[in-house]
Amino acid sequence: MKFIAATALFAFAVAAIVAPPCFMPAVTKVAKELKLPVDASILCRNDEFVHKFTIALKEDCPARDYPLAIETAKELCKDEGVDIYPKNG
Image 1 (spheres, rainbow, N blue to C red):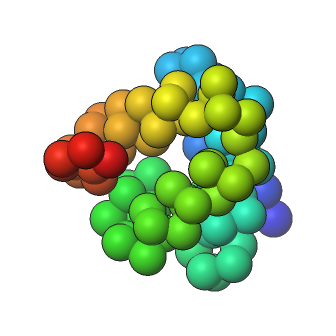
Image 2: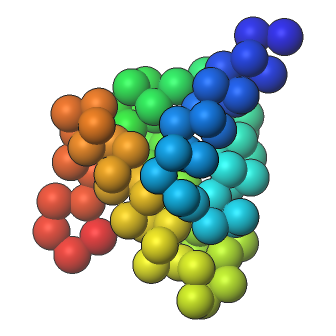
């Protein structure tokens, strides 16, 4: 139940930014795989999550949506005070 509530809160934050449809499924897939809560402040600070999430976006998003998905991730994490793609992400 906590996972569902956390996912709903995270999805609400994502909706405010305008993410492509592939974004939230990738978040939940990788968070579940790593047994992490769907909480931006935790996910953005977890290097393994960021790495696997980037791969998931590349695999699961249509090519046209990938840049927007990466920008969405950058913006969400920036709001948490974390620069997840400091160079050429």
